[in-house]
Image (cartoon, rainbow, N blue to C red; front, side, top):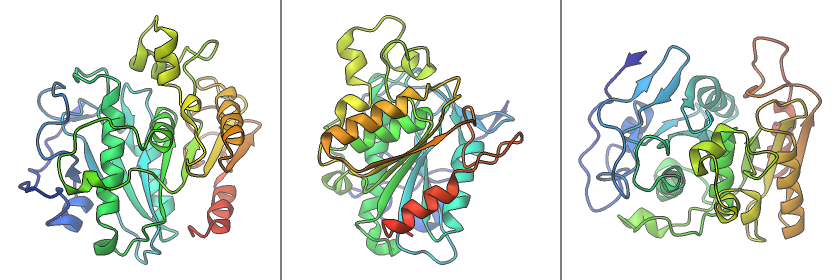
Length: 308
């Protein structure tokens, strides 16, 4: 494994950490989400770790990194890679998504979120706190970055799909005490793209690492419901695009069917791209084995809603 130390982050003021040196900091190693220690405290001590596969662990400082296109079109997307909340698949999922988005004029923001099993006092709440904070920080900077206030979406893969699903359905849930002006802004994304997401923690779909890391081996029914995405869908949630392979051996295809049904019941716009094959972890479709073709449908969906 390779250890590296992030550059020292900017000095924090009463306003958010994006207030000064924003573009340079975001585009390099990124900026810390929190002005001091994250809510609740705890967590690993020392440097973040990235292994040879680009998997991130030991997230002592959750961050947000911006990837800007040559010709920004005003749309922004917050990206959360997966990894079962054990690690973050930054290279294969987050970086690939950022590349695809920026090639189409969309400003990408890559979230490095806290992993609940790394000793954080708030446990499973830590990633959701980071996701809410990140969306608010992006929204705070729409004017300075030339972004459209109504076109700030999110995209998540696997456990990152769970996290972005939680953000899109629990954006108005208070998860931490406000720390600066950014926290007065809405954490609601304007749209959500979830790729092979873990949606439910209930049996018989309870064998995932996502479930284990969030609620453990023998959770009670309330905990299962609380941390399942579909149970929180409500009418004011943003539109969803789901993509899932029917032969997914990790996150059963039923996860996306449950999410689709919950959205339809609540009157939330939802579309599902079902794939006959593809397995799990196909990201933007660039697997070394047989390529998974789904991004043309994503592009058409974004065009139709005028996010592209």
